[in-house]
Image 1: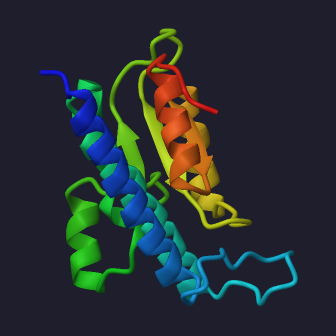
Image 2: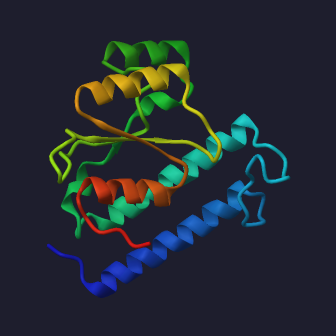
Length: 171
């Protein structure tokens, strides 16, 4: 079932409103990103996590809005290992197969070009770096044919997904 043009425009407007709201919450209300190297105060770890959270939420929201147009997006899912867990809960997740260092999002769909088995996306706040365990896991995933992208914004994540699926990207 395809989404009508009106439904598509309405979904895009909801995404824009949600993103603008998230942007204001993570920037102290100014609407401007708080980025290191711009003369503004460096991001604290808590602020960095909040920005990553809001950008990932915006990307997932876009994907959910686009599922009718792009059915492959129905398979996009998050990895729950990226947050602090009490030791007992962390132990249960690890015993069930959870693995530290896995990227935040997975799209288990073969790329249109056929080169990659699936797509993994690690969300990072502007200027953020992957940990050594994340670097190791990303390399392991690449060795078995996965595409791994590190994205600072929901827009860069959207572009990575559309490129992976062989769909046009605007701008």
